[in-house]
Every structure is written in structure tokens, then in C-alpha cells.
Image (cartoon, rainbow, N blue to C red):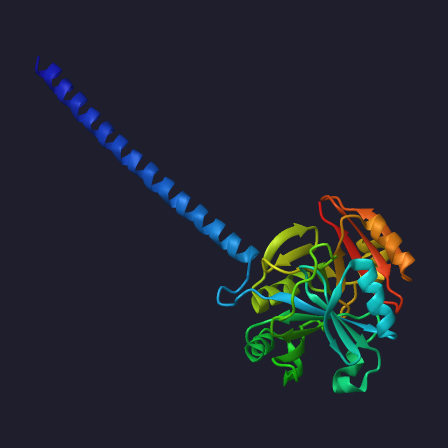
Length: 311
């Protein structure tokens, strides 16, 4: 009987220990689960931060003006008005500015214009000058320098109001800054600029530069070709310079030569109109794996721009 009681007490004690051990084990499982959840949350947070490096203190900026250069401004103005439905927004001497639908305005600058001063060498046929609209040109220029850019043109007053400046990014692309365009938007049936590709030998580094400078964030990621957006205006593509994957358009994707693509519902129709208006086809309609298509044309002066069908 004594032995039985002892055995019983031992069993009860053992059960108590097992129960306590079980409770302890359950607590460990709960604590471990909480730790795992926290670790996963931190990893996800870090991953999101690393994938989108836009500065939260920078108001997103969009492209508000694109300059192209012409050796015959009246002819090329008529070409773009007739082919793409653009309309006159402002008519400065040797420099008409066309309103291009819901995209940025397009200025047609005269080749060799002495009034361009020290900036005249930048205005060459085949090279577009892209202007980002910013609320404070001086502050944006200082930010560009902090991020590794170099000043080309300090803040300069414009006779009609506002100011502009220019800088080169860390790989050598020249970009301009200006106050947002005050011009009225043209007919929604016009073909606006929908994508501006900036070429670089360092895609990740250049992407980070523009995200931090202009508050852009990732919109879509094609292999080696991130597309950034401000939420308005044309998207900004960061393209690998001289990339063989660009096919016939490879010579266009060079540092210092932004590639401007215009939105169109039908590339084939637009290319036919380009040819009728005195331009020529550079690359016919080419389907994109993600949907839609692209193509390229050359205007009468020799500027080559792209066409983009959105899916």
C-alpha cells in the first residue's frame, strides 16, 4: 500500500512536471512564432525600402518640357502639328512651343541659334533636352549636386517669368530643371510623350539617382529596364546604354541622348502619317512581351523619336 501511494505520488509529480514542461514548451513556440513574424516583417520592410528609394521629403516631379532641335523650324513645326495633332502654346522667336495633349510641351529649337549662348552645343539634331518641372529650381539643383551630379547652367531667369537650370547626372546625361509649364493642355486626341528613356552604363545607380532627386518610384520592372513614375507626366525608363537587346534602336540608347516615345493607338497608322508628312520610318511596329508595341520614326530634320502602343 505504501509503495502504491509512493508510486501514485511519483506519477502525479511526473504528470505535473510534464504539464509544466508542456506549458513551457508552448510558451517557447509562441515566443518563437512572434520572433519569426517580426523578422519576416523587418525583411519585407527592408526589401520594400531597397526596391523603392524615392526620398519621402521630395515632392514627385514630372517632365514638363522636351526640346528638340531643327534646321528648319517652320517645316518641323508643321510636321508635328499635322502628324501628332500638337498645337501652338507659345511662339518665341526661333523657338515655338507646342502643347502635346496631356504630355509635356515640346519646344522646337533652332539649330545654331547664337541666343542659346554657352548652351548652344547642347542643341543638336538627334539630342532631346528633357526638362523636369520643380517648385524650386535652386533647391533641386543643390540636391542634384549632393547626389553626384554637376551643374551645367546655374539658375537663370527667363524673360517671360520663372527660371531654369541644367545639370549632368553621374553618368553624363544633361537634364534641365524649370518651373511647371503654365501652358494650356491641347486636345486629348493629340499624341503626347508617354515615356522618356535615359541611358546609362549603371542602371541601378542611375535609377537611385533619379528616385532620390525627383521623388520617382518604380512603376514596372522589365529585365534590366526599370520604369519609374511620378504619378503624372511621362514615365522615365532607365535603359542600359548600347544594349544589344534594343535591336535596330541600339544606336539611339546612348548616354547624353534621351529617347522620347510618343503614345499612339496605332503605330502602323502613325508611321504612314509620318511618311506622308515628310518623315521616315526608323523601325516598324515591334510587339513587346508584356503587351503593346513600339516603333521609331525620324522627323525631317533627322531627330529619331519612338512610338508606343500601351497594352
